[in-house]
Image (cartoon, rainbow, N blue to C red; front, side):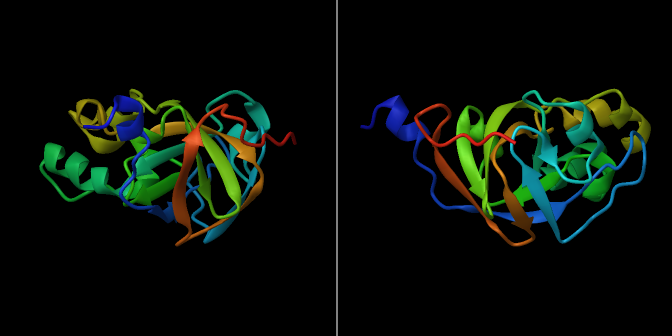
Length: 171
């Protein structure tokens, strides 16, 4: 039997970047480019949070597999990613297991900094019960550790615990 640290570090496969969403302004419709530049210590180029936040919530991610769960809890088809206002949709890797870990998407390195809990706006955009349908399925927040491009289809690769000596780039 493995110890818990060994189990926490074992990922059966890499994930995949499925969707990119940028919020140019608060409440503005999302842009959905095929690629974006992640900027260390800031976030994603073209996203309004990049200009305002330098903390730990520079990028938001949601698991593609959770879209079906959210739809099922609402009794309808999975919601479109743009409605949920997250930056990145990834599949094939458990995002929640990346909290406190570094991971690479394309050439950029991110660090899972927290859980992306739903806000009251989910009730507005998903309808009655939208907030509760999102609870536990809101995804992950991350900070950008190393700048680089992200392109649809890029692998999402777990790199290890945050702060284990991996490089940190400053913008």
